[in-house]
Length: 324
Length: 305
Image (tube, rainbow over all chains, first blue to last red; front, side, top):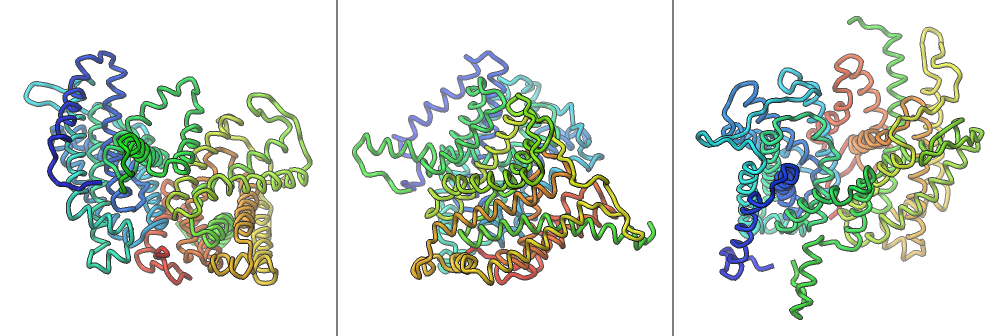
């Protein structure tokens, strides 16, 4: 993968066209249901991109993304509903709180790696969900929180799914840009070195623990933003949305898309979010198909959809496949 | 809250019983980890699946795919059927979820075992429905009196079976050729292969043994709770925590870690907070990782490079 920092024109033009097409979608899609799905897909894409920074770039597996989603959602919910904050500062606070929690949790956990990190993050996720259920004065327990206000600019209120779509779109683009900047600059190269061989990376003077914590905090911040976006969109939050299973779904989205690729993360999130709609004839058994798909993907398509696309493209232009 | 020695003794016994279950499942983790260097995230389903199979053969009436079956096999027959089922399951599991990925590092295997876990949890829901199923206890009474102590006979059964299994495992690993081959494979696969050990077969046997441990834990624990698709998940996570607390890769560590977490959790749930009882194992885990990252008995906690 070429890591040129500036976007070349040949790459920039299709990207601009894509953004224009994306921006026009609400003008043509009138179904509120479809727009909800689109908004949520975008929000999940942010969570999955965050996980991509941690897993795809740095090679560290976390199963706590849903917990950070919950922390973001409840920070936003608490500040706006209980303390009457306006929405935008609450969103900022949601990101800040998630980042802070990421730092506090990441500090002990990222002395670990591999399985230990995965387990520690699962434990953190379970503790977070228990806190959301039991800390009633702040979270209102299992009843959840209602009446979370939508954001507004001046007198323009983002109270329809069509309007909210633009907030999500901007957030996705900004998050993708930040992730891309990280990937193509020093931090990204350090993370990649850690992923490929942590001991060698340390030997070249990379402070691996510090960079892993940075990646963990970024992943948490992305999820925190997404949680806040979700809370202000649905106006209702409850603890059961932030379970271990949800973290697994995010992981699956990333793996299916292609873990080291930003486009892959977005693609995986959007496709798998719409997959249940496609699989609706299967009713409740679609999660079973999900599970089987994960095994099949990891066995047959280790680099995800993006890996498949790159291989196909490389074949059609008769070039050896690029090494990622 | 006054200090009551009888109540504390009762708590200790039920804590040790819960801890025994964690210890058995933790052993399953450690054996697989030692043999193939990965953590099996479907270990909880190794507990849940045999419980479903058991109730299907045991109960007078169970709905399978919406059809009521009345097998009512005698208890010993049920145990044999469950064990056979888990042996077959472990062999298939090894073939599908581990074997194709064996040369690709730990993460693909972890992800594929997570896939198996999602698949099985929802597959059992398709087969047996989402209602919890009650597994009858072997005992006609819930509690018995031992002097002043009120004790569940199921707890005593759990403690007894665990002790026998641990003794068996010690015998297997220290005294038999198969056990020595398993240890050699765990220590150094390449060298094990060089001296003529059929590593692939030993790995398959390890998966089978781990699944049998899961089946025993499931059969022991199911009468205390109910059989649900979620029953194994939390047990497995806590068992995993237990194995790290004890020192990952260490067999005595897994046993002592399991018992420790079981006891602290039971006392904590009684004296401190029942709402946060499921957090206790992870709080212990994170504290141990901070203070003594190698665990109580472990040498190292970093991944093999």
